[in-house]
Image (tube, rainbow, N blue to C red; front, side, top):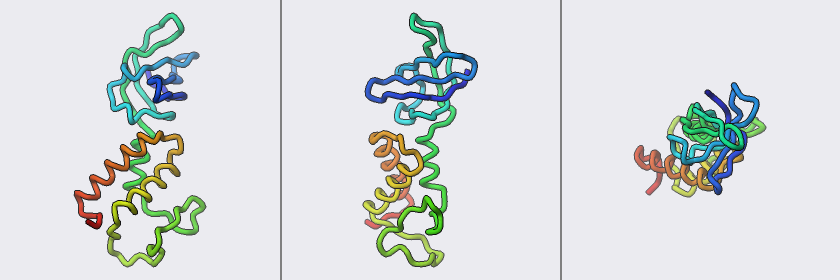
Length: 151
């Protein structure tokens, strides 16, 4: 059965999933997921198996179909930078408001972290701090590997 996470408490480690085939939300504990819990967020789509518990439906296993966290990473890495006329455009860092010259910018690690953080929070505002830090670290690792950062 497939459903969407409608409530998630990262501190207590549980979520509620609005399942497509049930009238009642399914309780899901993070111990019953087979993916990295940092990808769990409101809006995540999961495939789950459930049983009826004392308090209602309870997931016994869940796998990830789509995550707003993963979507935010793709957005941060793959989307072109918004133009200034776009209502949701990010402000360009100091010195980066010149027309594009066809060459890639080489950023400092601090500039990359700032831009990625702003993009993530603008794309998926309900990401937890831990999720933002995990995504930023992954993006920074990719950027270092490709030589996109100043030393």
